[in-house]
Image (cartoon, rainbow, N blue to C red; front, top):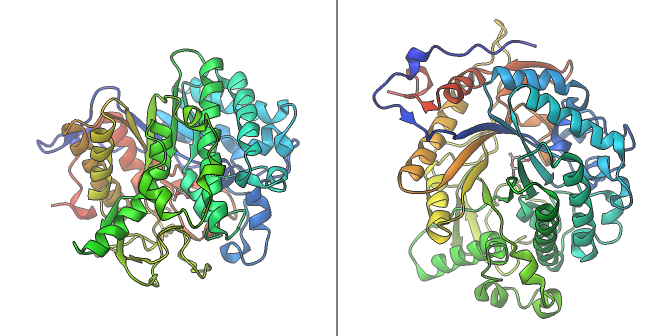
Amino acid sequence: MTAVRSESPELLASPSSLAFPPGFVWGAASAAYQVEGAADEDGRTPSIWDTFSHTPGRVVNGDTGDIATDHYHRFRDDVRLMRDLNLGSYRFSVSWSRVQPTGRGPAVQRGLDFYRKLVDELLDKGITPFATLYHWDLPQDLEDIGGWTVRETSDRFADYAEMVAEALGDRVPYWTTLNEPWCSAFLGYGSGVHAPGRTAPESALKAAHHLNLAHGRAIGVLRSVLPANARTSITLNLHQVRARTDSAADLDAARRIDAVGNRIFLGPLLGDGYPADLLADTAHVVDWGALVKDGDLAETSRPVDMLGVNYYTPTLVSDGRPGEQGPRHHAHGKSAYSPWPGSEHVAFHLPPGQTTAMQWAVDASGLYDLLTRMHREHPNLPLMVTENGAAYEDYVSPDGTVNDPRRIAYVHSHLTAVHRAIQDGADVRGYFLWSLMDNFEWAYGYSKRFGAVYVDFATQRRVPKRSAHWYASVARANVLPDLPKEDGGF
Ligand code: FCB
């Protein structure tokens, strides 16, 4: 493992550098299935992602998370790396089938012990643990009874939340229930490019409601188990939707995507219920009256202490035949129809300008727009950027370093947007880089590198990229310096 060298403080002393509020949290994020490996150790049973990745044709190169970055065995070294990176917080997720194999019954202590040890190691190094209960890895046994398309899965999730909160509640101050339920519902059950790979619009909408319900039930449980000062949240990948023109048809396309991409979660979670336009747009797909039972919306809207926002790229739409260019995460084009129920005639376009290795447009103004919108609509709800980052084609140079100027420029522009949103009143409490290290990027396997730390998957050697050194200096100073000239600054 190579140590992280921090850049000199003089770099930071420019009149145009941006100071962040005192106490701003600088973190990095990961997810269990993407990093842990140890897929069948200590009693863990398969999740939908184990099944999916082992199904030929689902993941690029047939990659799986069986070994991933072997974080399950190397977490102590990884936490040391985080300390060298000056991280204030580490956002990780808990593998449900590791702590409760099959998704029912008692907790497995060996599974919980892994997270206890991880959390203790973090605390020992002064890093605040931020736990996500669910980052897409439903126990396969629950999928076999219907997965997120059935209500029972919401009850199971609340039980699971209780056992994790009881085990870790005394030492984890930040909790998020679900990561990006939109992806679980619409990529898992709509377009099928994510596990469990189902392709039925009605199932996607049912899954969305049951995820909302699972979240609300878990919030109830967390509030009764956790100490009063623990912070609860949910993390959404809000779509910053833009219409290609101001025509009424294009604006309507944007409205539809905002409904099925954003307000389908924001409404029921934050107290406004399901939006009337969404219900009308999707009435031909699902019977909402049967799906949403009396009392459900009181559960889904239990108050949270914070909203986690994940942002990578804006979404540009127009009215028309679905285009070649789907929204991010369905780039494989495996689905023959739009995975967006009620928006079947919306076309997606690649916004102009630079792209990352995911072919996602680089546009930090989308993050500013999202944060300020959330602040306008929910002025008393603190926000955290729980994921932001970029994949590039990184490699180790002959001198042993990884030079990734475009990632530095990407993060710099997005941090500038966060700073501007804060200046304009948004209550943004922290920023988590996606990701700490290169890892299993879902349907893209190991072909896309999002890490600040490079991982040689053959040897598991970690090499902090230049962006890691740069991010470490920003985190230490709580100040964003000018972009270095060699990274595209002036
Ligand atoms: C987000 C996921 C995360 C990672 C990034 C690139 O949608 O939450 O696991 O895949 O995208």
